[in-house]
Image 1 (cartoon, helix red, strand yellow):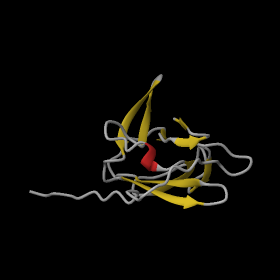
Image 2 (cartoon, helix red, strand yellow; image 1 turned 90 degrees about the vertical axis):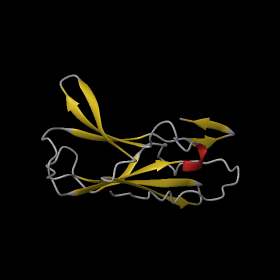
Image 3 (cartoon, helix red, strand yellow; image 1 turned 45 degrees about the vertical axis):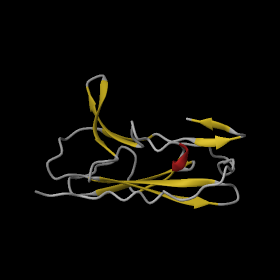
Image 4 (cartoon, one colour; image 1 turned 60 degrees about the vertical axis):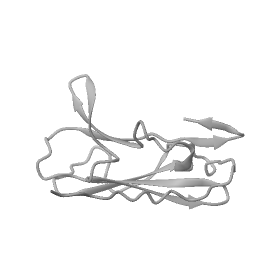
Amino acid sequence: FSQSLHLWPWLELEFNRTESPPDNATFGDVVNQSFDFGGLIFPGDTVQVVFIGGSLNHDRKTDSTYIEIQHANSATWDTVFVDSDPETRLTSKRKLQPNYREIQVQFDIPLDISPGTYRILYHGNAKVHDHLLE
């Protein structure tokens, strides 16, 4: 019998501040990634993507997920990992001037993963002009 404990580091007190992305960027943009787009990645590798996002406190995603790792299957994408899986990690780093977050997604590629094409999706919200963007 084994139990694991997931700690959610973004449970911090937030004030009702509006957010804005940096100049020449929008929420959801990728600002950094640890791999070349379309490049080869191997089982056992760890990949990382950093998105521009808002506070994770806007929606705790108790009935959904912040992250999806999806595998291409003919004409559809199948979700194979989400943020509650041990292969994924999500961290949020607050940036000031302007006020936004860098959302870092890490994915430890399992040794037994099926070959193919994968994508990383981030589902987040940002508060802009007192309205919540999804």
